[in-house]
Length: 259
Image (cartoon, rainbow, N blue to C red):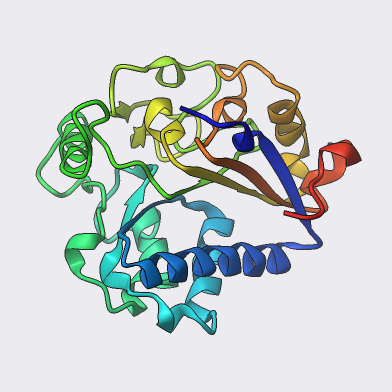
């Protein structure tokens, strides 16, 4: 059940560098608290320039060494179905920015299958659903992510859930194969909206003036089939971390100066 504190918050930083550092700092603090309490933590990563920038800032953070990475599991909200050595993979970006530098069991990095793994697109999506289920419950066959990072496109898409396409409406599947994506590459795997919204915290990270319209529509309660970012909501927190350019159309009363 979603509580009242999960109402959407907007937190603004001056530029992308300060934004990445601030989000990374919040994330590391949460990781350290979980480590101190001996709690496992499941995290869903995203791609895009800011997804990589945040992870690089985590790697550089002074307290990254205080995290017990053996208790952290990394997943992805979506992936490009390309070859394993392709730099287009979100996994490749995350490994370069952070994961390959960590002392973490390889089994804790839950990557989606690549196009050269011997599976077709549908089978790869189904395989990821089975892997998610190993950390789920009978009622929800997937882990509830402590933090689900999402990027947002200028069109308002999240993960590989694009506006006015059937994938955003699916509620009876855990993962989906996406074909003919409006953004290349054409074949992708994505989590569905129910899995994303089962996360304890959804952190949407956005920069640039080209995202201002999508942010404004998401905050204004636009229809999520047309603006998927409007339908992203964590059970405990939903936070849009944005730079000043992306916040250009946000009314001042919607910006949280204290969070």
